[in-house]
Image (cartoon, rainbow, N blue to C red; front, side, top):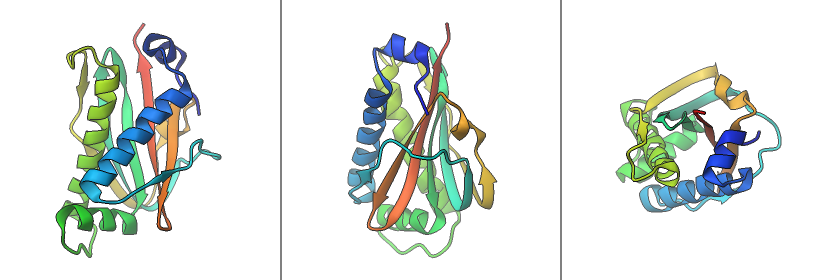
Length: 168
């Protein structure tokens, strides 16, 4: 995984610095919204494109920079995240879980927009998209211009990925 050269040049960032922004955003969102402390395990050692019994929340970026930020987690952990956010038990993957993962993706997108945007006007965020399934593939996760950070907490592991490029 690596950072797009145009993004690195324009943003005066290297891959490690970009990863640190994603790490900071994810830890902040989880500590305040989900009440879970995380540990990152950057860099990702092996590419991950196939997900089993998982949920993926994504938000697209458009404007000066284009791309996608995504969170990928096992269904059981997604239910735990949702339970913490709502303050009540969540037994099934459904609308509440989809909304929770979409909201986390949206907040991560907002943080990345803040890092790369000039006054908030040159990057737009899409509405969150959530995918859940027994087995699916996310092709953007295999691209070389994608920074992927594994996180873990109390035996649960999930990934946050950022694919970003800059128009020339």
